[in-house]
Length: 214
Image (cartoon, rainbow, N blue to C red; front, top):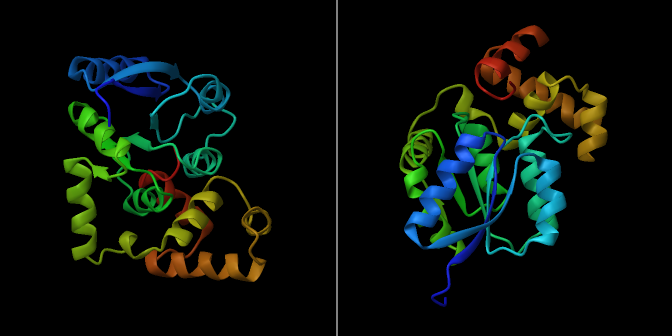
């Protein structure tokens, strides 16, 4: 890597987070911010116009047409497979955090507590090394050691629960994911059994309380 600052594109729908992230990066002299966006649509519109070395983005920006965080990160990874991506989040849902990591992001930052680590995360991502901030790393480590009900959900089961709670039906999820209705129904029932839930109302309440949906 040369001595030039890394070019970072920032995305978050909260202006105060953009200000804090920019300050942390530029004070470190590791990186310079070359672009900013406050919605998914703006990210996808501006990225082709603004070459960068690393994208630092919020997990979900609800004011966008695409308000599904997992689908947004998947879209970025598919559209720009060589671009290192760092996700900033305040989310504590371990299933979704694991799903985000499985998409190939190279950084996971707790933006509520750990923006000071952003320069280190950017430097790691630029050299293709994974960086997970301290609090999230501890959460994920505990997840491996514990066997709580929520943690037993597979990434696919988490996704099905989240989409169901967001208002989609089994048929819609099957069509969207390219899976059979039988497969989606089975994943739904497996998730509900693991969570000890018996009705769709309970499923929605669980998803809302656990941070899967806003």
